[in-house]
Image (cartoon, rainbow, N blue to C red):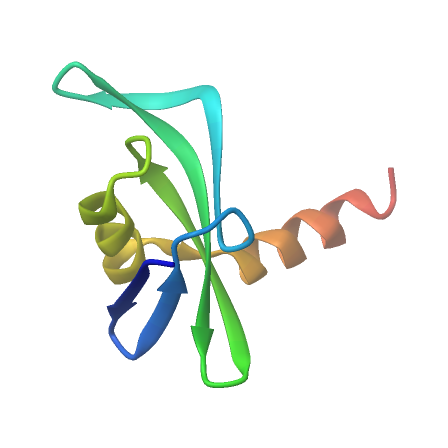
Amino acid sequence: MKLLTRNGLDLPINDAHVYQRRGVIIAHQGKEPLHFTILRCKEGLKTKVYFGAARVDNLEDFKRIIDYGDKFEPINQWYTSHHKHL
């Protein structure tokens, strides 16, 4: 199994840790589509979840998400808090 290590985080390259919603194209880089991507990175026993846009299975894009992507937890908390009352 491949492992990407970046900024003290480990990202196993497998379906349990990398989720790409292929077919949902956020933007294009050159002529390649960028897909909604969630990365579940390990930091010791903790898991940190980041999201961003990436080309299909592109490790350089995954590194960019880890470096500059948004954490998923605050977005999920915001979404949940705003949709409880609906």
